[in-house]
Amino acid sequence: MTQRRGPSVIDSPVTGDGTQGPLAGREVLVCDTTLRDGSHSVGHQFTTAQVRAVARGLDAAQVALVEVTHGDGLGGSSFTYGFSHTSDIELIKEAREELTHARLAALLLPGIGTVEDLKEAVDAGIDVVRIATHCTEADIAVQHLKAAKELGLETVGFLMLSHMISPEGLAAQARIMSDAGADTLYVVDSAGALLPHQVTHRVQALRAELGEMVPLGMHAHNNLGCGVANALAAAEAGAVILDGSLHGLGAGAGNAATEVLAAALERAGALTGIDVLALTDVAEDVVARECAGRLPSLDRGSLMLGFGGVYSSFLLHARRAAQRFGVSESDIILELGRRRVVGGQEDMIVDVALELREAAGRTA
Image (cartoon, rainbow, N blue to C red; front, side):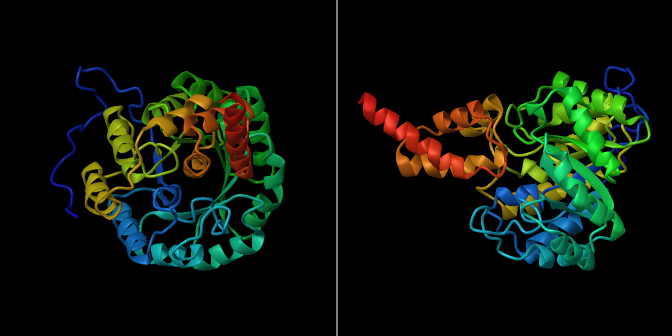
């Protein structure tokens, strides 16, 4: 990778038309999830060399936070979610050795990861843990949040599938996590189903519930093509940390692309501390090269995830079921959306595919 080749094209928070950017002078941190959410794109087959190269590049670009685990978090390597090439703990150790600026984070979903997994991750060098639950189940994170605080970690409450509950309901769930010890609370658009105005309403509701002193974050997927726009909307509404992944690597159509997000934030006048040119180098020279043919795209199935409000990591499972049972991938995804299926109900994908095949046979 090359180093930054000169001053930013945006040396002040003024846009090309001479107006002040909407985030002028605001500090916004970026968390890169390439080595966690991006794991879905590569079938959880990241190698230690790839993790080192990505972590090294992100650190050189001055990204604030780097997340590393299996796509489904600590303990996710399994028959249900897909086996990792290399264990979470080993990948965390490898990344730790490359980071001198960025803090190191891990994701944990109660019911998949355990407190023992968390202790191992602490020993391996994480600074931050993001405890993720369905948006209506914040109470199951209480034990893990309290354990994380006892272990000296910075903690994040990660409310997944945030489109499935009202802004006020989401804020009430955020309060549960905050009271249990979450330092930061996240709106998580796991299905890529939210539009910018809906993101704004949710961030504003959390801010009204939690006050000005609790940091808020946004994790945006791109299934409706709104990943970066949703992240920017969250920042304008008061979020101070935004997730992305290099080249958008991630479940479904992927995440807001970190390099695009960083460039857009700079255009909006935000202060991220990121070297945008160095970040684009690692996206192109490491991720695009290493993941050629696996970069996410906004194809039919990914679009249906956003349209139907379905968990992004269901895409590959639905695709395999469609091929296995000879039914429409879109029909599977939309039916899952009608049933309001959530993460952890992957077994329902096969049930739906079988029912669709039987229904087609009856009408043939």
